[in-house]
Structures are given as C-alpha cells and as structure tokens.
Amino acid sequence: MGLGEREQTLVLIKPDALKVSLTGYILSQFSEFHTGLRFAGSKIVHVSRMIAEEHYAEHRGKGFYPSLIDYIMGRLHYPMEPEKRRVIALVYSGPDAIRKVRQITGPTNPHVARDNAPGTIRALGTVVPIKDAEGNVVGDRMDNLVHASANEADAEREVKLWFRPDEIMPYMRAYPTEVASKYYFYKDGRLLTQEEAGGVCLVAPGGLVWASDLDALENLLQGKPGPVTLESVAAKYLLNREGEPA
Ligand code: CDP
Ligand code: MG
Image (tube, rainbow, N blue to C red):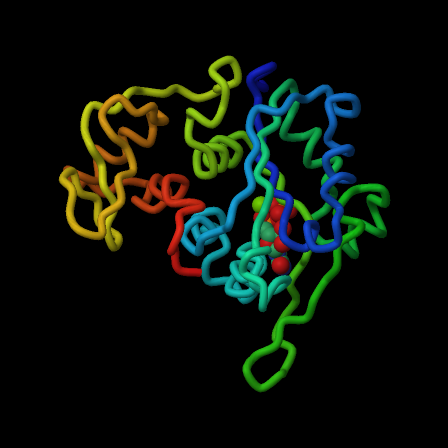
C-alpha cells in the first residue's frame, strides 16, 4: 500500500553528474511531464563527512565504503577544487514516487544498466577500479550519477536526513512535525541544551522540527540508547556552514 499523493523520494544528483553537466538531462528525465511527480524540496549542498556517513550508514564496513564517501563528498571528481564539490538534493512527491524514480534511475551498476536497462540515467555512469596505497586493484566503485531512495523506510529516513521541515513547503510535508520548546546545541559529538564556546545551535525554541527528530533528541538527552544517532539528526543543521572541515 503506497502513500498516494504524499509519497516522497530523495534524489541526489551526485558529483560525477555535475562534473559532466548532466543536471539538465537528469531533471528533464524526472520532470512532472514524464513522471507526474512534483518537486517538494531542492537545494545545493556541500556534502559533509557527517551527512555522507549517515546517508550511506548501511554500507559501513564494505570494501567500497571509504571510496563511496569520498565520491559523494566530491573529493574524487574535484580533488583540487573544493568549491565545486556539491550535490543537488531533491525531494519528489506523488503517487508511486519511489518506484517511478528508481525505474528512471536504473540498476546500481552502470554496466548492468547499459545491458539491461538502456535509456536509464545510470546507463550513462561508469565503474571505476579502487586501488590500495600500493596501486593494486582491490575492488570497484560505481559512479552512477544519481541516488534515489529504494523503499518507503529509506525515503523517510533520507528526506529527514537531508531536509529540515521548513525547507519543504507546508502542503508538501509528508512526515509529522513539532515545535521545539528548548535549545539544542551540538558540540564535538555531544548534544547540549546550553550554549558553550564552539557549540552550534541546531534548534531554538519555536523552531519547526521533524517529530521523530525531537523524540530522538529527547532520548539522547536522557541517555536512552536509540536506533538513531545524534549525527543523523544534526547533520542537516550543520550543512553549508562556513569553516566546516572537508
Ligand atoms: O544506490 P543504490 O541504492 O542503487 O545501491 P546501494 O547498493 O544502496 O549502494 C549505494 C551506492 O554505493 C551505489 O549507488 C554506488 O554508487 C555505490 N556502490 C559501489 O560503488 N559498489 C558496490 N558494489 C555497491 C554500491
Ligand atoms: Mg541504496
């Protein structure tokens, strides 16, 4: 059973797509004319290590993981030009959004996409050998141009990871929100409710937050082990800040 009009999916136009100027093509493939889906959110993001690691948490420990993190952070496609390292993050909304977007995106492996699903976006991607410090090939990385949420649970987690609720217009918000009644600060991996030198204010009283994030913050304050990390809540509030370590 789908969520109907309220179904949403997260798309990332990855650094390789930006580098070869495929943005316009990708947007046209996902356009309302082709898919019936509407934009619910969009922004240009300098990808922090924090959000990269949260986004790809399920792949932690796999051989391609370090390379995947460097890839999504733009470090591989723009080694000397940090100012060009970015992704375009989009939320699409509408009936069957997740499946429709995945179908246009195509299989994860660009070689498979070319063989089995020509015409999909990922058929234009590449597979790159991963080398160790000695130059030996130790695996493959798939530079496949776009990310698209795989299922409803991933879509909800990913939309909330990349977007604050106030970045999505009220009519388009698919997940419950709440208004914060106190301050939450982030400093060196810790959650604080009072300002400290070097701390960053994530949320202030009156701020609109995802209800599940507020639950997570309160659980963390009470020291309850939860399924979510502080970073999975904080990452979106720390994006595009000056001085953030690359
Ligand atoms: O992106 P998708 O959900 O189709 O695939 P995934 O299995 O969740 O993997 C996430 C991303 O990791 C892929 O899109 C690839 O960029 C990369 N990957 C890789 O480089 N090598 C693999 N063997 C598997 C995934
Ligand atoms: Mg995936």
